[in-house]
Length: 83
Picture 1 (cartoon, one colour):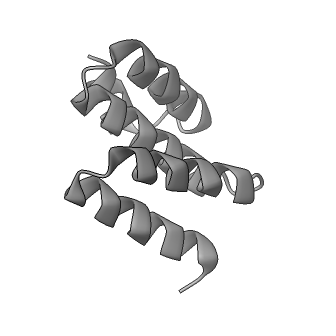
Picture 2 (cartoon, one colour):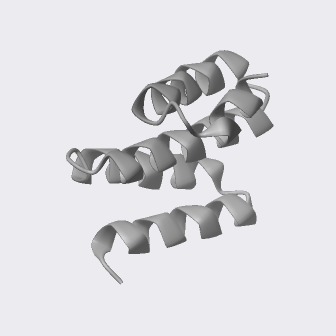
């Protein structure tokens, strides 16, 4: 598995364990490492947005999910999460 894939796996694991700050940090690391990879970028933004949404931090969630929509406007899940 590549580094980005490993980071996604770790971020998902930390999210499931409830270590959301650690998961967000991992997703942000993905954003830094994957500047040319739009798929990884929008998936990391979705991950961050979903965490913030579940934490009730709606402004932060919206910020990240809107960025994800800009990168992949066809992804219905992002629009669904935005309500």
